[in-house]
Length: 259
Image (tube, rainbow, N blue to C red; front, side, top):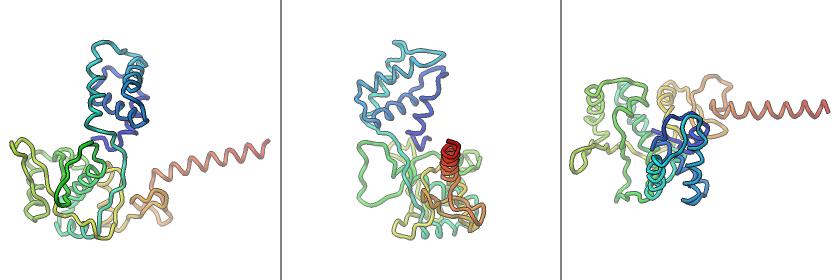
């Protein structure tokens, strides 16, 4: 599950040692090039250019289908870009009534994922519901991985069933019963915003920090982060970025003094 496809595309472009041109990577690149304002013709040229920049393999006629599929994908989907989402006080209060820290964290991550995927929905034609719904479309395997818990399929279903028994979620199969989605009833948009995030990859840390009263809001980006010291004002990402800027400014000052 990729939460920032722009960043992922930039990583893909740096890799010059791929062994085959995967559909997934080519689709992300196509979406990224479109995001930069390129036409379909230009996107195709850039994809071929990327293939020919490789050290191990180059573009050939057999890769044409992969490139065509990537460009066709643009008709239905756009690039996924990060967006800030919030978990509210009323939602946190309801999660806390479960009384089991492991199940609470899993449910917290489920809500975070559902909110993030809804806000960063890449579909060009989005489904419109008559009432405001929060839906989790992912698999339990993805959910537990992001919650940093490893459970077998049977145990995962028991935990999800425990949350459903409380009335906080409802599992709904599709018409042919081949796949389920989860309607989340613990959804209170009008309540006080407490936790802010723009990457579900690390939200599992935030729930325990909230319970332990060790959570702060970064003064730079506004996202919630784990408080590691009384002097901390920023999240690690912003701290590293500001540290680089500080070092660069210091180096410039030294050069001005020396000259």
